[in-house]
Amino acid sequence: MKYDTIVLGAGMVGMSTALQLQRRGQAVALIDRRGAAEETSYGNAGIIQSEAVMPYAFPRDFSTIFAHALNRRPEANFHWSALPELAPWLYQYWRNGTPERVMRSARAANPLIQECLAAHMAWIDEAGAGHLVRETGYMKLFRDPKKLEAATDASQKLKDRFDITFQGLDPNGISQLEPHLTGDFAGGIHVDQPVSISDPNALGNAYVELFTKAGGEFLTADARTLEANGNGWQVHSVDGAIEAENAVVALGPWSGELLKQIRIKVPLAGKRGYHMHYAARGNAGLLRPILDTDNGYVITPMAAGIRLTTGAEFARMDAAPTPVQLERVEPEARKLFPLGERVEDEPWLGRRPCLPDMLPVIGAVPGQKGLWANFGHHHLGVTLGPITAKLLAEMMTDEATFTDPAPYRIDRF
Image 1 (cartoon, rainbow, N blue to C red):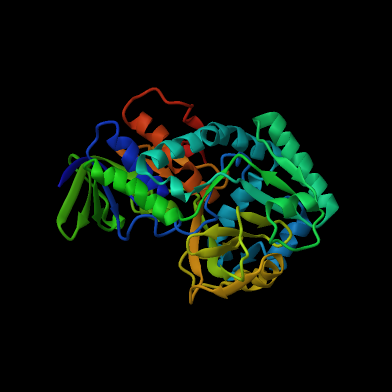
Image 2: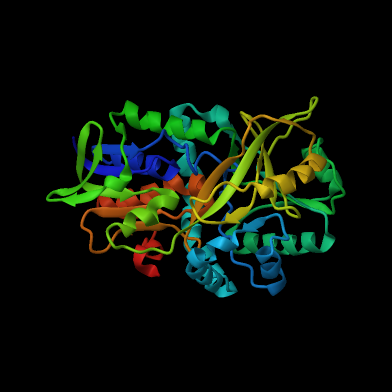
């Protein structure tokens, strides 16, 4: 089976890459060992974050670092047994947490963020998936007036620099937007630009359907069988070899392991996260995602119920699940919103692919003719999938790129 390009990974980034290349006339094979959007792209808050220019930076104050190291704050959980493996990456992550480097990453992310929603909406309209979209933004809640003031100041700076709009809320304003929330709030911030998705998995499958209806092939194969051949690259499936001149590594948190096979090293780590769905009690309803800033979780309305998502867990990729963050924040979430019974038996566990500067890798892999990369989207895989795929497809087909791809090159580290 021969194609122009093999795309490895059918998460939001991989499926978007396949679709963007197909629309430039390429014959594309999209491969995965599972179905579409069943790993990292499945479990998230469902927000297309068209405001998220500022990366999740490593904290700079030692009190916060100390609290995270001892697992005293619910937004993070650290496995000390993983320290030998994570230490080099954590050091680089810390180095990239200075105000100057964070702003450099924000400026580099901005061209992608500016175009991400338009890229999604064009496909959503084409796929007839508008019923999955809520144009209600999302809300951040604060109980401490000083934290609210600091967050409002930061939001104003983002508005001034990047034109990111927001609305400040007093307690009455919170109740008007979300009448079923309860708590002693100092206030909130309504981020009104983003939209949210009620089922990220369904959205991913809608995009894959666009790809397959246009003649693209979604095949089951193991990306770890990738190897160079005389004409490009190939992977092996149960039906034989899949060959192409080009291959794109879009495996999210597993991309680094694959590249190690061909002696390419990238400082990629997977921040783990959990979610659980709940029924709502009585006639309670939620109109948008809600971030509880004091407790480090998000609740968001999904097709499967109210989804409670945790912060980051720093652990080995293949470590057994330890959903202690979910256990910590569930009581707080029940105080915030009338959650009913759990819908699933076990929490979902996923891994966010993070590079130290919280920017993705997009472009050619040096020294490996025909091998390309599109991974490392950290907390923004669903948000950025279609737009980073557009940039990569422009590079692969020698089009003029809509933005300078230099900040995303793989050898920047």
